[in-house]
Length: 456
Image (tube, rainbow, N blue to C red):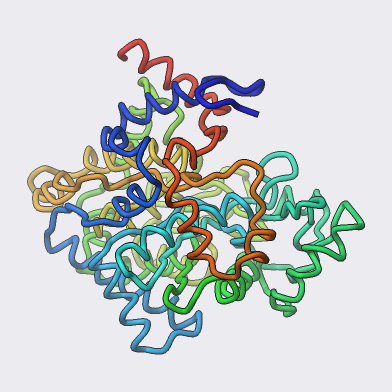
């Protein structure tokens, strides 16, 4: 266990070093470390200074349509869906920290509590959350979307073998997924896991992401009051958003990204250049803008001339033009990568994303390489708008990370999630952030802290 300001046995850098680095990179944090968490949550969901232009207005309108669509799919009526769409334009903030986890998972639960704290302080009604579903069930150890710590043991959420969990992505079809909660401790079978089985839907779903989204809807309604509603979407929904852009010949993404401006190729060059400098590794060219999707998993693609081709020799290919890319997205043969997700949900519409230890670095870098790929003449208005943004990326995941806290126990004691959030909200940010283990145990952050300490 880490001690305050010290270093745990498995840490590569101390929590105090991370706080100094975070404050150097995000100077606004200097005002919040010793203040109550509610103050930081209020600021994160506060008024946003952002540039405006016609391209940005168009991108925001398309994002509003996505928000309204997913709200309707989750059971909202048309008036409520329009209200959610209105909020994203008035308060352009999306929680994008947790991957597509059940919200009762500790990392996800306390991040959603943090968002609820900030939103309720502004009397907002909609918690808008993007959960990345291109991930696999196992992230490290017995952690990941396929597992849940129940206090008495660890539950295998879908009862999958480790082989399947290590080779399948949450967004992939081809199997049937239902909540089973197989526990490694017999006591847990009649405890928390049994309670969850009663709370979650018993139906089978075509993807694990669909099951988790449905499960989160049920858990949210059970835990939070109707004053705050959850709107959640994943990479497939972002794929539909990208398709909306590409299907309109007059949209900026259709005109400039592939056709006239060739921004896509310039972006790839900018990534290569970035990885030859001090920020190497933070924005990796794992796949070019999209993942291929099939046979239960995603696979990387390379832009070869005017065609997206698989790098694994499977023969998969999609012509890199707006029409064919849009069609492949609609057919779920393609799914956007994180860079493309950031472009259509944050950079173009001017939305603040709230992320964790890696995102607070890679999102500003993505914004930087995106501007480098633009043409100062043809894209002048968009460049000016992007440069007018302030705090477009903020730390918002694992900001609240209580040591040894158990969401299942907390929600059983108090079914009112906002009451739990309010109790944590009075504690100072330095305390609520815990041991910062996701920073201190990360070799990228260890290297970054070392470079900053050397004033590089």
